[in-house]
Amino acid sequence: QVQLVESGGGLVQPGGSLRLYCAASGSNFRIYAMNWYRQAPGKQRELVAAISSGGNTNYADSVKGRFTISRDNAKNTVYLQMNNLKPGATAVYYCNATVVITATLATVRYWGQGTQVTVSS
Image (cartoon, rainbow, N blue to C red):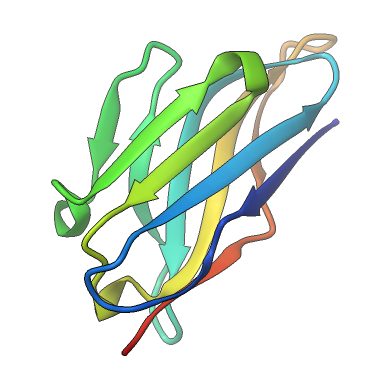
């Protein structure tokens, strides 16, 4: 019904920047909240940033002031601008969306496949 595809990850030096993208595709759905999670080796998955349908945002304390989440509803796309990257940001970043399926009014959470971000000299 709905697919999420992330892109924009890669290798960057400490202090550098990356911009992640997540595009939703499918039919007969309405997107509400969109989020970015990350998971580093040996660690639990954590919420990095969230944005509501109205544009309200929340961030993990570890990224406040350096990461910015935004969305383009016309393109069904959410972005994560990451500035002043630190080695601790190295992880697989996953897009997540809360979606209502029009035909059934079911609320479903969808996940993307993940994109690798590596911060290293």
